Length: 78
Image (tube, rainbow, N blue to C red; front, side, top):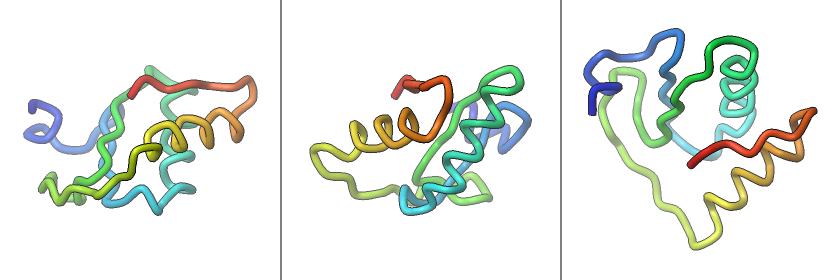
């Protein structure tokens, strides 16, 4: 994936884990206030894919948490 090769930038951000919800929300907010972007979860700061284990509802839960914590509500594409 090209985003991994080019590393983090103004429009690409890596997060190691979904447990860093405050960091995820801050990144989403920053993207909303600029040009948009791509957030890759399960990738360390060096661009190495470390992966994350997710349950059936994990992605839905993340989208709902982002919507609940943004105003106006934002429903990110996953």
